[in-house]
Length: 140
Length: 116
Image (cartoon, each protein chain N blue to C red):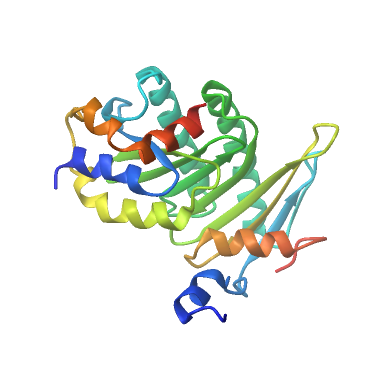
């Protein structure tokens, strides 16, 4: 399965609204998030999550996954090789489910080194009201 | 009707790990930890919370309520804000890999001072 297909599938995890893959230099390799979130913001989120993982790794060596839960959003950040996978979800999104889903896609996403486009299909998006509803709940 | 064995497995939270360590960061920044590692984790959570504040603001996500870390060890920290906007951080650290949901549930049931 292609990395872009795996990223799109992550939205099938209950609560997950989207995700992006950021390389060590801070470039967005794959983005599958609502269009109103700018790349600059994703890069900023990625950098801070990377810093959070480094901070967590000092007392807890080998930490590879950090979850930041806010009142209206949950951010999951996971190291996949040299890249960082960032998922955005609803407040109640379950860590165990996200961790399982990302574990499956880890090897494929770790191998991504060049930006890749996730094709957008408005028609198929309309045919999936469940996905649109989850996004709307997160982003208002 | 009694739940099926499958449902029971899903809905029953396992007990907190006996090896878990705990910490509390009081609003005045005083840190109480059951071990030196727990104190170090508490300090890193404070730093992570600072990083997260900017992210939450930029995304319009609201206040940070919890931080979880997973890997060979796992950690769950809950941030609670009182009526005067003072934040208390309470956390559990499990030296073994585990589900943070377990730590969160154990933390909800825990009160008082850090224990090992």
